[in-house]
Length: 198
Image 1 (cartoon, rainbow, N blue to C red):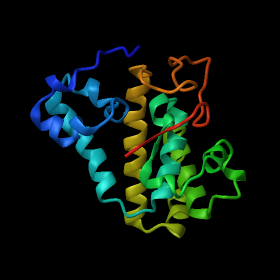
Image 2: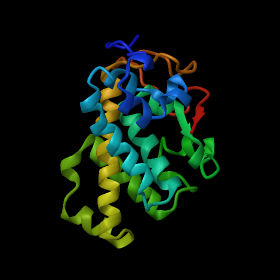
Image 3: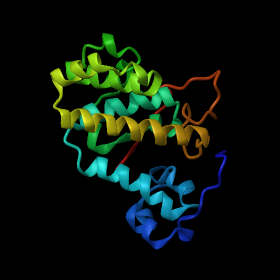
């Protein structure tokens, strides 16, 4: 059970409810917003950031979804690992998701995807290793604008994913993903049957 209670959507501010289209979303799609709603004005910050990253992204949907799932594994964010977005579903198979366990060996990943995933690994686990040499490597495959976009995605996924993990948000998750956060028990994006959301 989550460490902070869910606020029923009927008690959300109108601005927050309208922004996330709460009345047409499933409980799982509302995710962490159900707890952020305790501080509705502050909640608009991370929610707006996530919406801007979705609306204005220039990088391929597949690359971003692979990055999101890899960072979710590092965060051990159960809900992040359980969700597959419809917008990326046609481009990513569950075999691709399985390949994220050892991305350096995955034949289905191209060079840009592999490097973006390495950036996510470093950002989540060893951010100070992202040095000048690594930026030079990034800039051989990505423009500076794309590098900035990747970094902002990493910041969003690491920050909000860790917040969700700390809150132990496992309600409404399918079997395999619904185990409470515990340092001795890791879950992977392939631990259960994923749920496709909008």
